[in-house]
Image (cartoon, rainbow, N blue to C red; front, side, top):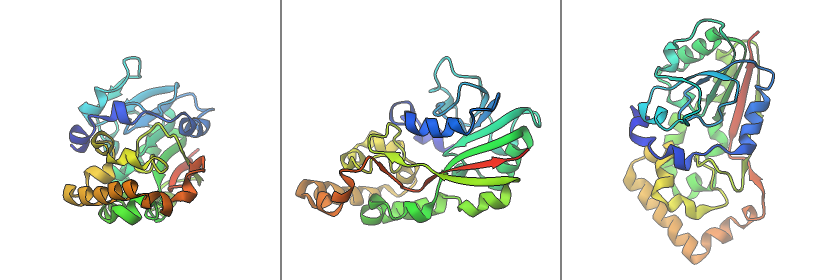
Length: 247
């Protein structure tokens, strides 16, 4: 299983960012019960979560001791009764599901009111400087992983809305574009280990691209090319909240 191999650093490198958490929790604020699907180590899990579902024992082992019970299962076969929770949450996980349509159908089955997904738009992400200038192979990986946003409108019932989620300059969650203003972070092996777009791309290609980044940081070429980013407080790398009202 992917995260049994690559998820061992999540409790250190993938700490939830409070500003992103606020955007997610706002969509769940009037929900009395939430199921967190693909829950991982528990990032962004709201207080009114009643059950978490995660297939990787490595990820479950990193959950806080006071976190809600995590059941080891996959999204495509949820061990949860039909219409038993007000809302279902899935944070940066749908791209790893083997059968997207079946997994989303399961979310619809268990949910009474709302489904909230954090995902991303590859059409925006591919223009991110890291992928565009240094890791084109990772851009290919990203394209293969990403779920086109129009799939959600087709596969989810009711009214589906999409909300941009900007990445703060000092983002504490080390996902793919988290370090858009802190490029040196991408050179750290522990940071790389927490990113699917790195771990699923051939290592030789990642290494070559990061060596080019290292050289550009040393010469100042990166700073010249990306100087417009240095004074910004947030950046749109394509992350999106997909919200579906199913009642």
